[in-house]
Length: 198
Image (cartoon, rainbow, N blue to C red):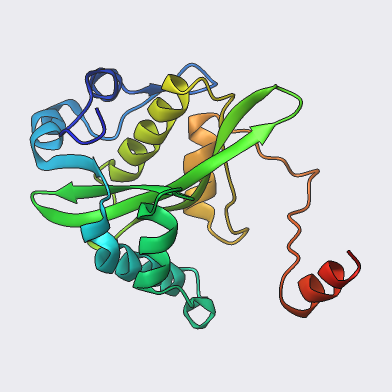
């Protein structure tokens, strides 16, 4: 259950660690820290009452990614698109000992090849103070658990080419890097011109 402290499946997975493609087990903590991890960390679904917090976290992520000046999102945008009658995204908030530690924001996609839905992970962020505790792994495990319960083919996301710690983390998880694909964006005036051709 997302709204609880942990759902039983994710709790069990984190206790065993996450198996990687190479057969190793990725653990967010050593055995001595296991109880601390289980009692200090909670992950919950974001609610409309979290929009100011979500906005702050989004700006912190943008600062880390050196694109703070590109962010235009408002609290009203988050309320409308995340908590209205037809939500466009979902979010999880990670808390460590009652303090906000990070978040994951994701939304649905669809694979015409698989004939099944998927999830696109737009943001995965852990505040600097809380890194190294396994919180990013736990957030990703929760998103993966949601994907599994909803019969999704997988979870997809992007990572900046200079963010080597994140790249190394995803490689240890066994994620597939789609190097043969280019990410494409149509926005601004180019979007306007394309729309006018309709």
